[in-house]
Length: 189
Image (tube, rainbow, N blue to C red; front, side, top):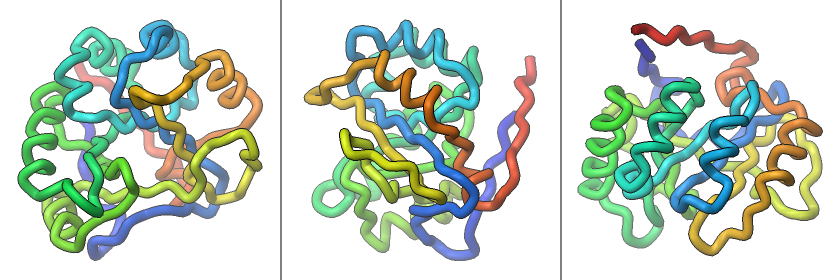
């Protein structure tokens, strides 16, 4: 059983930690090599932010994620322009259908949140997340950073480079980065 909890007392977007750095991988498209990467990625796992349409299209990959107990969150559309509360509720229902619980984390694809969307996510006990660093060629280790890497349709992804990054850098969970402690979860039969 995975518990859902609020990390804040009011709807605030968490975009920085204090105790290390965390990696978030946004997934909305299944590139060649994604299945193999999901089967072989080692702990500590990055947080996977999953697009609801991708979740619906990729039941086999979702099963791998669930079996390996890789942490996930919900990735929404562009919050500044087109992502509505109706979209959020639809995406939340898809996530819950496949994962049998609410996501602990929610992020929009443009990292923007309308105030009404923030309120609805907060009432659903889903924490809002935004990266402080977008991974690129000039990436530098930054204490407290929440680093995001996108696997979208137009992304040019090299999973061997992602594996090298995971081995080279010390990434920790968002919870450990923000609060300085780790959360242990057990998989119940």
